[in-house]
Amino acid sequence: MTTTTTTTTTKVYIMLIFYPSYYSLYGHVVTMAREIHRGANSVQGVEATLWQVPETLSEEVLEKMKAPPKENDVAVIKTQQLVEADAFIFGFPSRFGMMPAQFMAFFDDTHDLWGSQSLAGKPAGIFWSTGFHGGGQENTACRMAIQQGNTHIECFPHSQRRGNSTVYRKEMQQY
Image (cartoon, rainbow, N blue to C red; front, side, top):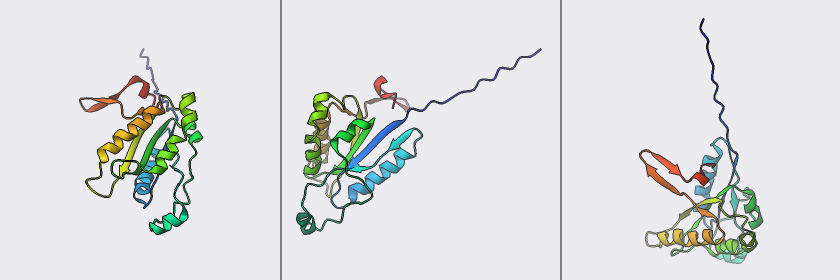
């Protein structure tokens, strides 16, 4: 008599709430943000919501700069909404190695979240665009790491290469 045992494998997916957030003056960064958003939503178990940070320039200044209108299908994020996310990716133009004032103002408004450590340990990454080769792009990443550190957000990725695979820290494996 033969006995057959059938084993079924069940995949368990953890829902990851992911917030790609950006600032874009002329539209270059929003194009990248939309692709990141599309890619994140194509991954099973990921729910990505695209956000833009508040504009700090007046309409008059934006007109003089010939800036196109803002995307009206993307909501403006409030800093308190960051608590809802499991992970972030922040995008902005780089100007001489600096993130724009709009993003700095957004991060300056996270002081309550810093005090309560509501963002501690959440992974985040960045992407940026610059108009020319000598813009100090590498400084942009360093300065953003300081902002992430100040709010206790984990700079991502924390990985090391082993052969053909990337092994993430144990805390990051849940994502």
